[in-house]
Length: 101
Image (cartoon, rainbow, N blue to C red):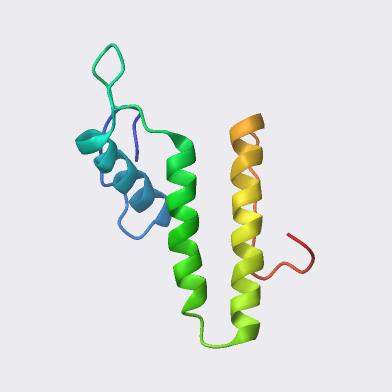
């Protein structure tokens, strides 16, 4: 489990935990500090880098149909992340959902 202002590996089988750990570890080592010495990570930098990594994985999909499904899923995830950031609401997405992202 992640605790605010700590770096904890969490559950290595949970993508959320792994990403939180990676972001927190990077922040601990490289991010600028606030007045209390805590790392301050620019969320736009995180989103941009996660988007780039996602795009790299989409590119490696074996066929066009799979790439299109993954691209739609990535757009839904990014949209959900922005909704969550703005409202605090949890937004579920699925790679199997039908419809526009």
